Length: 266
Image (cartoon, rainbow, N blue to C red; front, side, top):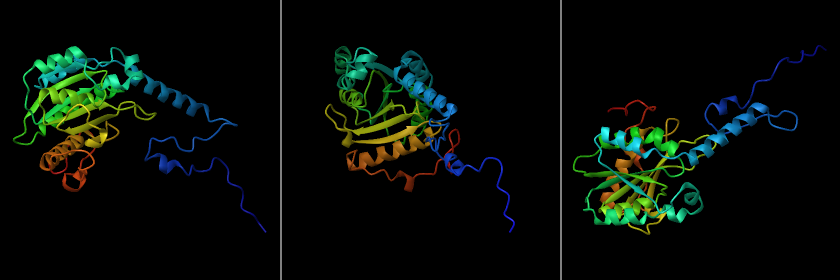
């Protein structure tokens, strides 16, 4: 009996199709008892990029200039964390304003705005540098008729809850914190949006709605802005945000196209 000749050359990679749909590290292979050198180097690079994103300072002056060019009024605030090392070790300080800034905002006239944007460095200033401007532009351009936007607050050494104090002092009906998310090994520049109805110190995460992974490889700015405004409209109708407000925007909003494009039908 003749047997077929054994196949020569490398076998097809059964994981290839799956890798085309995810940035996750799948089936890295091996070299002896270790992973291949290329995969080890790629992991080291991703880890270094994540660490750099955490420690990179936010260029608040450049951001303020870009927002001014967009026609936005800005104000600068800082948290009670005096430096990056303290910010990382004391999350509680990142949730409250610096005393001087708290007094300054407390003495300022309340804006009475419907929505206040707080752009915060969070755990990735890189996310703000790359994604904040196109997102703010999309939010401003998509403002529904009858809505009053407040100034854009630029916050440094900030956690999400810092927006509660800023919004309360300025008399905002709602606050949306645009913040750099904790970097992952495939996403050092992911931006998150946290929306809170009637912000005040002591609000919990259960009282917020989150839109995550706003970035070129994730949720496009136009789609994120459309989702935010849908949530804002529903929050105003229901008088709340958080677990009582389910995000059903995908069922009623227009389908988004890849980053840089327009919403279908717009």
